[in-house]
Length: 283
Ligand code: PAF
Image (cartoon, rainbow, N blue to C red; front, top):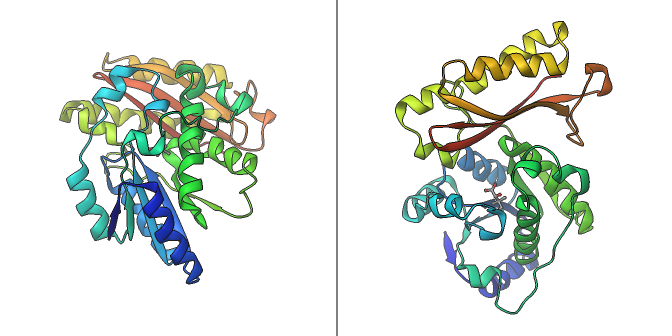
């Protein structure tokens, strides 16, 4: 496994690999890796000859400086896990390598997609995600991009990014299923900040999303969302930021189930002082 802190040397190495007809899969991360990330590395390894992983806690996607400061950083452990999972190249740059001083990074707009759910609650978040992923894609020029479905809205935003960059035919987008703990809690780097009790409480998010699959035909989306929020908050361990039913493609909330051919349930909630998100396919 080769380590790079500079885009210029990584870029040269990858260009040589491409010239040798090697295909490249890319997994962008912010580190604090868990089995969900390692699933992406393993999936990339199955599809492509070489796998690149980036570890970069991107400041432009944090609208809350306290959240950025608290984001877990575990680089030594991450490098070990990546070596065991089959990553070939790791890029873990300083901020100045991704955003060189006096350069103006490309920005992208995602329209209605960024005005709902995470976009509405974290203004500027997806602009920052788009900015960094566009930069990382230009450095790595991969054949495949691997993302986790846990960040479903991010997947839709980055699908739009590939289209806007006109790279949608050049880069294959692979969206991999959410990896869960045995109690259903979606794996996330942020879970490291939960106590054992917090992890138990957080598992209710998965349970309630699943109950919605059984109940949705009896209720309207608004009624079901009220029921879900009430059920999640009843014990006083969870505070819900949103619990929404949205069209699976454009993520606009549905008022009636028949408005959309495919609906997802998406939730953001606080457990202890940790903000968690999760989602599932309803139909
Ligand atoms: O999902 C993440 O970890 C980040 O948003 C990403 C895609 C690596 C961009 O910083």
